[in-house]
Amino acid sequence: MIEKFLLAFIPLFVAIDPIGLVALFVGLGTSASPENRRHQAFLGIFTGLCVAIGFIFLGKIVFAALGITVSDFQVAGGLILLCLAVRELVAIGPHDRGSGDEFGIVPLGMPLIAGPALLTALLILIDSVGLIYTLASLLVNLAIVAFALCNAERFTRWMGKQGLRGVSKLIALLLAAIAISLIRRGWQTH
Image (spheres, rainbow, N blue to C red):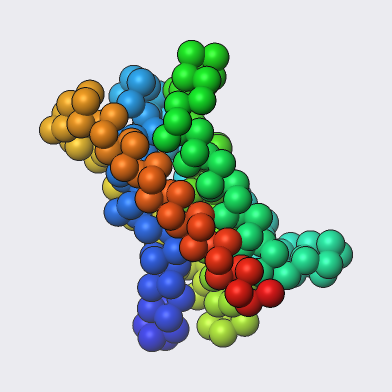
């Protein structure tokens, strides 16, 4: 029983990457108040949960109905992440964005928490370990994310505004690399 849980937990932990999410979250929320950051964190986690659960039950049906594959999904997710990363790196429209404090649903909830890696892992895990273990490991991983994001404020105090801007740009560069990796893997398996 514990073995099946761990078989589901570990890939989901890697796919969600709670540790990396803290750095992304701190970078995304540089202009938000602590209360708004907390609100955005829970909004992102709730969005990720809803998308993941919806995908667990409808993913294969949607893929079959649309005639797409997991590889196609990886490429599309990679392109979205790449666009988000480029926008952050070159600061396209920083003044006209207006929603710099609103990042809970997009990009935090989807595609950072419930991104192509998580959704693909969920489809694979349901077949290999079953629905109950997959759902349980998803919930535990999201609880870890909630804990990590709620303590992200400590990083903010420690690093300061310029440090956060630097982290934000570094994370955007890493996001671009992750996006390219998703696109490459999706293209190679196609």
